[in-house]
Length: 204
Image (tube, rainbow, N blue to C red; front, side, top):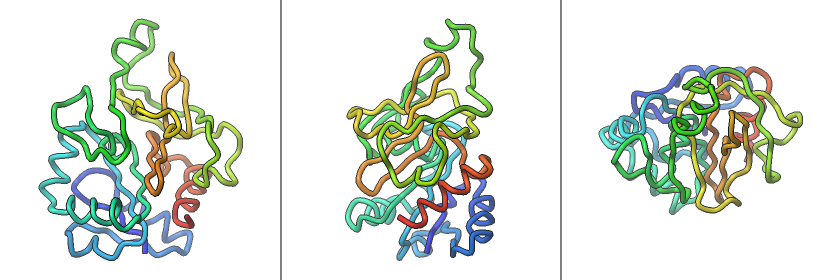
């Protein structure tokens, strides 16, 4: 069963509703006991990096999450800030991340504002798959997804970057490392392409 991690951040119900509409079983996990036994994990998130890590720590689910993902190989999909906290660190805060995928989260601030582009990067934009991944199976070339963010994931290893997007500069908008996946955009708000991506993750 797919478990959507509810640590107080993100629209959990949107993911549950979408999976229900697909006829796939999904459940909310807000305690370590509820998370145990997950076969797939969705980790949503909104807001700041440090706040998200603090909320995850306070939920008590982090040790179980780490064990399932790192020891048992359970697939995980981080979404928006849920993707960012998969990194080792962020310019947005001082707390260490989960470090599931080597890299750091950096700000658009010095890059896009000099080009006259507003922050946050908000609205629909294209994602160009860089490396073949089952996450994008059956999705059109350069699909459009919904974004809302001011920071982005910078991979230590370019092979972990499976999708890129242009916003003044090119940045990584989708990552993968073994059983670990992350997307900077919101698939739950991205209509057909987002639904297909969530379905692809469920079928990994």
